[in-house]
Image (cartoon, rainbow over all chains, first blue to last red; front, side, top):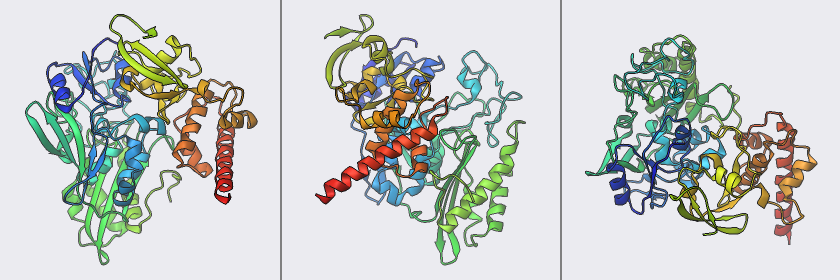
Length: 338
Length: 172
């Protein structure tokens, strides 16, 4: 591992100042992705700002009935929090679908948003990669791309965002709180991660020197009708080929609100809010779900190895919505689907 | 400062490791796993993949199982760490160690310290009961010999012992 300056931040202001002062500075929380990337020489920070002492490890009620999750709350603490389990079970389920217990005990809420793609070419510092070295090319296009994007990719990058938690946060319309040299601001979850375009080196819309302090969940009423369905090459401890976070509200027998976010298919958690609107007022039928899925997936483009994901996504969306409608969310222990 | 780890840039930290306090000066790029193995001669925790994918390096940090290969030691200043060397009570093996022996829950043994620390963490968490849950909650520990069936047997046995002890205490 390359050497770096180490600064232990004793306040948020101190952390922001230390991050903003140096171009190559990175914040360290759980380290489960950053330390890994440093070992591979993919991340080469010149300064590490250790934020683990900051008072950002609690979950608090908000005035409007939501929850504000401190950036340093671990994935385990968040998934098992009684308020999250009762009010945001979709989030709890998505977190438990990801990584391993050991990683979830170390990984944090803020860090989860900032984890980098698991594209093999990005992870191999000897290969070209526009995300790692802008302008060097994308060997995944025309290369081995079984796990890569089918939506929103560009001629520069076909990487996917690897998070499970973020897929649920996208469906729940979470808000990201950041603090930077110019003060605090909030970023809607849909605007936090970005598509690669011709600048795939930027995963998100944070500015230099900014630090995530919290994730806010607006009040939600998807306690019953939700499901997080994750499909992968082995039953546990693997990144999603595709995942679906589905949540439905009913008014009588018809759908009054539907939220569907997809993971493993794009550079960011993928939502199509216009397509979601088409479900409103209609029945929770397989036919309606299939029409919805077709509409969401209309702009898909396969890359060769990952063409199978298009049909798999169609069926996964229908299944997740069917599970949500029935009030039988996908178990993250017994993963047989049926 | 009883140990100086690395060069002059060492960051002073204090750790309790298997019940003993250590005041150390550690270079910031040293992982907890390397600190344990290379500098403190605690080689029970194994370096398998060194990337958080195999679980062989699992230790308990403040009671929680964590991959020590992905932890920069300086970031855990003040922590209470238990490695596989710290589980036994002198000559008495920890119940999880006993169960691994009893159920022959290993072949080559390389993943075993991580498996045992992880299983102790699993019991602490209190979230896994059924065999399916044990399997899911042990998914962060890979065993290339494929001793999984016996590992699940061992963990199930310890959970049953915990249950029996709890019921006995409740009855008294």
